Image 1: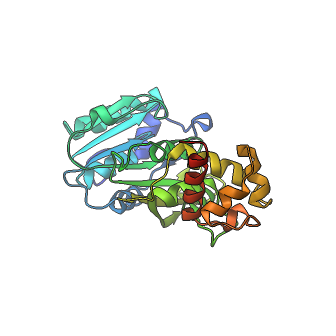
Image 2: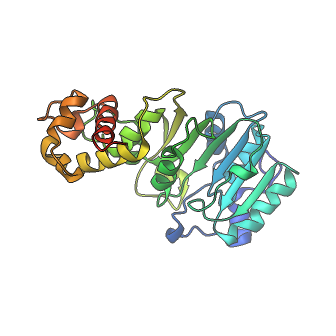
Length: 284
């Protein structure tokens, strides 16, 4: 029996192409097309939009994105076993799906993108989700080439993405980077039972929208300062920031931060001021 989009059910596709999920690739497949449709709709109206998807696997979310009206989907897949299944989806939606056989950590999709709006929507493999996210956020040029990110992460990673100094248990370098350059929200959770195989943790859909005018700061300076600060997060900043070299007390004073503060107590604006002060002290 065909699915609502006229293509075979995902379970049949996986069985026919021998696509049992591989743990080494961080694969957990979603078979429920109602759920993949919900994820696609969470990215907003897709008419006229190019979507970049990472790790499409057998194509469940890919099919939902196309069914919901995406003008084009650029699907980046490193598992060659999935390519024949994705080719069937491409044939069903002529001219709208481009499958790239590549590792998303090493592939730049920008040359394939046209002039219209671009969104990244993906059920990210757990083992590369955070590196991919930071790669999309830590470029010097801003605003970025994408209009929004709608991504699935483990719930604990999602909580770190949206955390601020009011959530000291989860606030860290990732929360500073995301809070500085984007507005991030957890949209909804996905139960382990929705996946094959079911992971041991709950997943969450997170959406990040770029701030049009984030506080001015050099990315490398912010990364260095937060690495030092959260590397010894239980220590006062006057101690942990010694990892940067020199006396951190004048830097803290210039940034308006008490030298007795700890990393998890400092808001994003404070870290931006601290990174700027560090750059200034080094003549950058």
